Image (cartoon, rainbow, N blue to C red; front, side, top):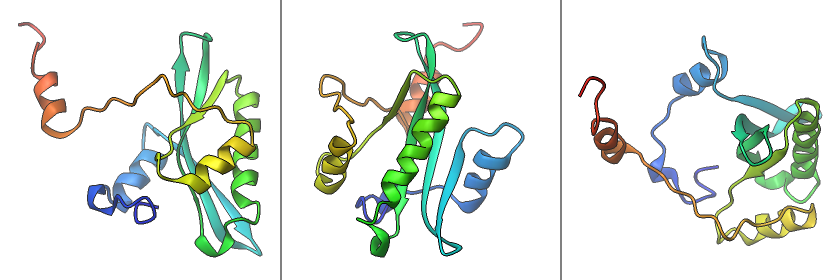
Length: 142
């Protein structure tokens, strides 16, 4: 997925990190695997957030991947439909994800299923030294 998104240089996580996030003492994410003829062809990694606007939890899709040779055959739509049902069953008010602005095939696909771009919002991120610096700004007891 990182290779397709041209972001391999940003990956620092390991299999152990992923295993801990999915199966550790406090799981932070869940994953579903799509299979065809008993072989994995897709996966979706997701977690819950909360919206004060709608007063309900939301389902956030972090990663959706379909093997290149299986794209355009409905596997992505099956995965998203499954997650939409899961969101409904869990009482979620939203199902959201991010997509790179250059990924036109994905953007067209998401429009075809009724997704709406949130153009008025921009993603903000703190990581690395910026995260550390802010965390240390007002230490407890200071």
